[in-house]
Length: 433
RNA sequence: GCCCCCAUCGUCUAGCGGCCUAGGACACCGGCCUUUCACGCCGGCAGCACGGGUUCGAAUCCCGUUGGGGGUGCCA
Image (cartoon, rainbow, N blue to C red):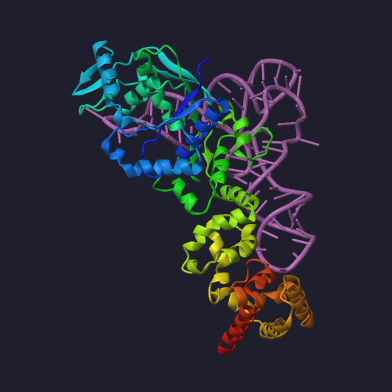
């Protein structure tokens, strides 16, 4: 038995599509699982698609996901001779004919072409429904069918794993493979489509299909991989979130569900949050850095303080991009006030009272989270309020918001001077209203 | 129109003829914990599209209906 050889063959049409990423992933899983090889084949059959930026885009995305390939990428734009030879051969064997400058393949008018698809079972087409398709255009370039069949044969591919939208080209490619003289049959696996809420194939126009954009939102690569593998496949033991090595060990193409799967951002984020929580505090702080740096106040972030502050939001972060909003008050000279929170919380009768009591007590309290905690608690007691309610005005004064990281720990990091200053500023703002 | 495919909670899935009173996860709704929000924990809601077969027995096999999707380029 020869080694398993797979290929991921994207057309470079822009940033990598989620569906393509999933296809790449499944190919990679099969290769890893079987100890086989995976090659990257760029289907840049025309100049428009050969633009370096487009190709770099693919590399970057694949790299991010850590999907590795064996050997150098194969560029179809560099293999035109091969395609031409094949077409000439078909022409001379009378398997193809010239029509209006183009070359068409002769499809038999009877019989059927079928294959046993690893995910969908037997798929069968009647030949009479397949037209004599073009294998070489009038301009002399090979079509997708030709390049596909020739390359899969020439590169010794054994398994073709691709999207369901390719099902209808499969009989054509099978015919061409036979015409090339291949005696073996490829294994095909057509993956279910990833669809949107309307159950339609994800499209560039309507949906956010660029893998890149999820990266930009702060989705972690391993979380993305983990989520993607769950679209069309489920582990037998019901453990969904797990290391990629385990997935490799468990994954089976024949277990892939043939029906289309809806892309669920909520679930992606839930899984991402789980990965974030599992990170070490140091790794999390590190991962946050680019997101913080891009803020207007990014230059004021010092690494020592970041390490203290990051753990306070780690378990509250679903995607990295939402962390800056939770942390800004640590780095801003004065907090940015949420108008709604201010109105709701500072508008109460007790708010000014609590602020002034807090300012006094805090001026002399030992500066440790637990003590600050107790200090606020007794102030609450004074006014017959639970701590949950009593801490609110202080929180708004210091962070600008009604919700955020744990207050007393935050205060400890911020330091007495800043805290008192902010409370005083809030008092003044209150008076001016 | 024609060709091909698909059909289990709202969503992603487990299920491969008896372990199913259909399991898990996300979402949602309660509750507990609690310094807000989260996290965590406990509980709840909710599904085999329909109709016929086959079988002692069907979510599981077959046929049909309905619904959904993909493809129908000298794009890939």
